[in-house]
Structure formats: structure tokens, C-alpha cells
Image (tube, rainbow, N blue to C red; front, side, top):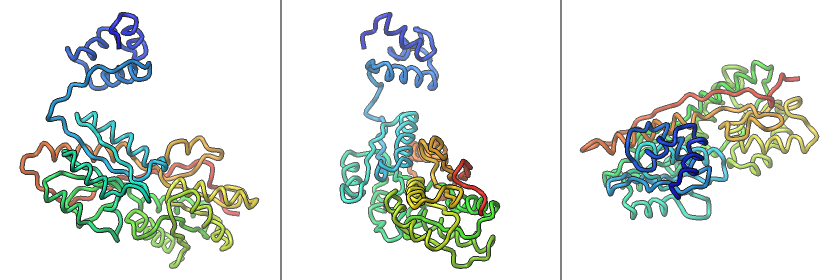
Length: 338
């Protein structure tokens, strides 16, 4: 950026600060709060100017972040907030995306270790899979590299996990449907060898028995994709369900597609509840009733824990579960049973 008066004034106006504040951010002198600095940097990015050279030292922490495929908006949200929080904590995030059939989590991990990352964050990774080999995580711990996991607690891994309360979310969803008069409710979720899906299925079984006396409720396991959910919804409709609780917003959208393609209406004929409350779900028509994952709170706690570990000499890793309460966001895809 050319540091001329006009561009400084543009940035100041866009950020709602003084030109003197913009100058302090560029020159790295004087006191500027973190929030004000973020406003100025955002204005610089949005106006297309080059940022000031970052103040980095060889001691700046680099944090390896491995997330699942970014085609699912909830994982894109985690990646976005993780990058933001790591930067706010004074580090640099190196984000890698694990896609089925492409680069594996282990390959990403090997690459990040070659780059000598200071710490690691795993989001819904192999740690969440009950069938997975946990050896690579133990090797990371043995190498004294702090790590945290998100959405997939495993007591076998000596590291803190930060997860959405899957059971709490499912209980809220089923209770809402029961209050609307539904008793023929199905759960469409992921494979239960993965921790979050297992917790959803266990909670669904328990709450269905408590509320409607159904000890063998309908649970359909499939992938967390639009296409898989759309394909499995046919069978649920044939079994006469009046409501479907899904394990992700993408699954909910797939279910709604099949329901409407068969000439039925949501929610008049079948109610649908998603899980995640990912971007744009409130803007659909009808707006999706869904369980909101508190992504910013989970990410902030996970990053804070990791940086505390980095700052602690002779850090001793231990397992701990931190569960964050989700909220049921009621919109327009649920209605009273006929």
C-alpha cells in the first residue's frame, strides 16, 4: 500500500477510526487495542490495500489445524474461527483439509510435523473414529507437541477435547417434536463408530423410550451428505414417520429434497430438524429448525487451552472433556403432527 493521505483516510473512514489510529497500526507504534487493530486490518483487506508487514519473530507459534472436507459448511465455519482465534492469540494457523480419497489425516500430520509446528488442533478427525488407530496421536504426545481435539473425545488420548453436547441437542430436538404431538420420529445420522454419531444415537434411544415408550426407535446410519440423506429418506417415509431428526444440516436438506420430490410438504406432512445451524440455514424457505453448535465458544476455548500448554514449561498432557451446550433454533420446518 502507498501510505498517502487519501488511502489512510479511506481506511479510517471504512473502519470508523481516526487516520492517526490507522497510522499507528501500519507503523507498529503507539497503543491500539486488539479490537481496533482488527477493524483497521479488516478495512485494509476489504478496500484491497496491502497489509503492513506482520510483526513476526522466529518464536511465533505455528499451529497445525486438520479439518474434514470444507464442502460441509460447519467445517468451513470451524476452519474460519480457528484461523481467527489462532491469529488473535499471536500464532499462525496452517490449515489442512482431509477429504475422502485424497490426502489422509496421517499424511497431513506428517507434513505438519516436518514443518515443525508448535501445536496441533484436530477437528472431527480420526480421533473421533472408534475403529481408528490412535498411535499417531500418542506419537505426537511423546514428542512433547501439545494438541487438542474438537468434536470427538477419546479418553485414550491424553489431550483435552472440546465438543458440542450431542446428547443435549438430540434431547432438545426430540422433546420439541414430542410437544408438537409427534411419536413416530426417526433419527437420520452418521455412522455410529464415530463418537458424535454414537452419542446422538444413544441419546435418541434414551429420550424416545422416556417420552414415547419406544425402546427400538428408528435410527438410520449413513454419511453426513445431502445425497446420502436424500437416498435414505425414502425408506423412512415408507415406514410412516411424521418427523425426522438429522445429524447435520446437509442431511436435513437432503431429507427435505426427497420429501418434497414425492409431493409431500415440510412441515405440514413431515417435520425435519437439522444439526449444526450452519451458514444460510436461517435464510432458507422454509427456514430450517436445527440444533446450533456454539462454534466460536468451542474454538476460543480450544485455542486458549493450546496456547496455555505452549506457555507452560514441562507441560504434562492429560485428557479432559469440555462439553458445550447447544441450542435448538426453532424456525419453520417443524409443525404439529396431523
